[in-house]
Image (tube, rainbow, N blue to C red; front, side, top):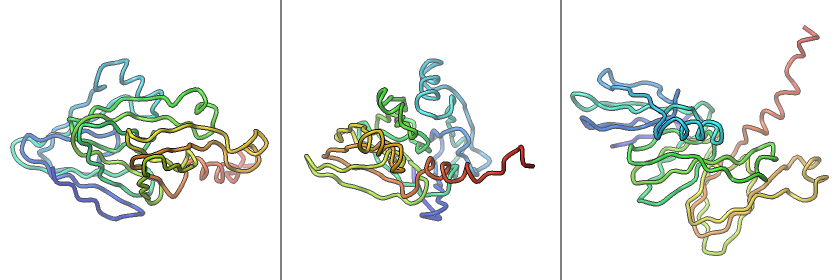
Length: 226
């Protein structure tokens, strides 16, 4: 499968060129355009409980769509909901973790499941709900804003706001914590952060959806005043 990522970094889209009979799997609603010979099959990918777990804990759709080129080669283009970038992450049998909402599409040999970061992440306004992606093949992840890459050496630590995480490799150890005491957490504008320890790759996004909503919602017109 050949993949071309265009319109980076603000309004990226990814076009996948499929050989006859080749398939790609994507999040519901990710398809922007496709050839007329692309067939679509929708399923929970792993059964009812796995689909529910992915939807409730991972923030992703209950269903995933599988697109297959039928009767010849075909193309399909995917685009994320939010304005931002897309990167191709080639997985060679390892496991990577992708932040809720950043999973866009993947080869059919990649299994997508949810992994809850733990109760501490639930109390953060920017809950750290992750999808666990395992297998071999290309994985397309999207961001809100541009994507930055960190390559951490063994033992190297980095602190990241949970709202700016896109994903990391399985070699990365992580721990979610408050910025400081509860006063600092509530008043500083910085809620929960993640201590990341290498070795491995980390993808970050330059914008936070939760921070944007925190700015936008107080500015929306009040129904009582209309």
